[in-house]
Length: 131
Image: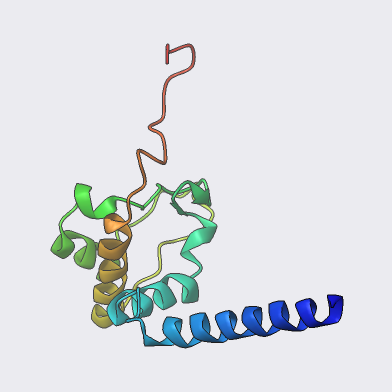
């Protein structure tokens, strides 16, 4: 009796898992192709070593989760294609990207901006400032 119950539960579990696996393959890609290519640029240039996304990453640069709200796409592309001279006390210089790489990175930022963050990362406050 116990073996029969075990076999039935196992068969139902396996069938349910197989069905869910098949259904997940039928769903459209949740991340657009342009955003995926922009993420690859982000990883290739190791941007996370200086900049953060969603509060995670480097602390030398800004958190770029919602940078698309602060700067226009054209402004960001121009910055990446012709990066400004950085202050001499910075450990790294900003890499110069190609036009195509810059456009892909901006598409990635547009995708990130659509993710609901519920106010995260929190805004910086001065020491002693009340919550």
